[in-house]
Image (cartoon, rainbow, N blue to C red; front, side, top):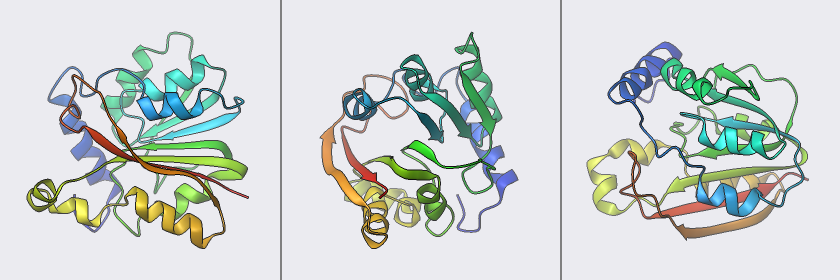
Length: 200
């Protein structure tokens, strides 16, 4: 990932990554999503960087009207294979260039690869008044940060919390949570930073 965002290059990079295997992720919904959103009253939701669709489909199963976006056409096509009844509106787009109408009651961003200054404000703009943004990312240790310097330029949960505080939003949850994933590319990460904020 370069600091200069180009939609076509970004999409090509993610298509290449997804094409390296038949499945990149575990296929299960994120544990923090399940724990925190289970009791929410269903409304409209957007899953930003939806990958192969597990979170979006989980929301749809619980009555949410879901839009799911990802820059990778390969990922979206895989997600559609598991959506037999077309419950989700699948869009091939990154958050920076996605055209989405109106605010959403819930915006979900799980481990998004968004460079700072290139999409985080739009994440907040997507939330309807009274709605929530759930932002989750891995807790990155020093060794990983040094070997993958792009993490230093990415939007992380503490950054979202800072922006929400500046905008006068309510920070509902800001905490580290253990993560139990046995397979998929993210299985090596055991702790997530979870931020749930609510727009006034």
